[in-house]
Length: 116
Image 1 (tube, rainbow, N blue to C red):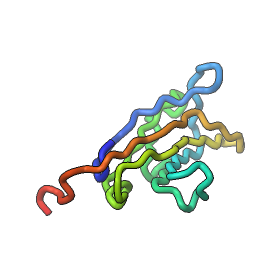
Image 2: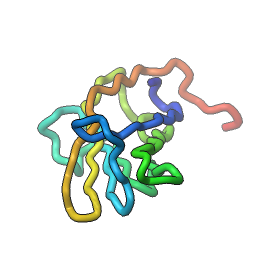
Image 3: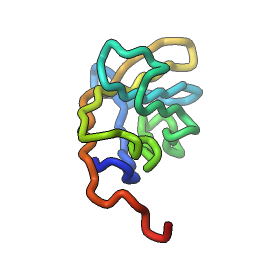
């Protein structure tokens, strides 16, 4: 993605057998960091359910949408690769990390916003 842009990601969350995760009353956390060893409070991007992560109408489908807002990346000084994961804590306290990877954020050329 490009620094300072809006971006939404459709998420399909499944268990190890490929079955949809039941997200009923689950807590979802997306964390993106510069380094794997960084503390969570030092994350570049931190999203939770209701604050950047929206679960689909039927939570038993394992579907959600992650939204990254311009302010999440606009202060990055240069292009960077962030390490991320999505953790799900179910209603009884079980924790799974169904998705993880790297997010490439490239520097943009235009630094002002239209209408600003």
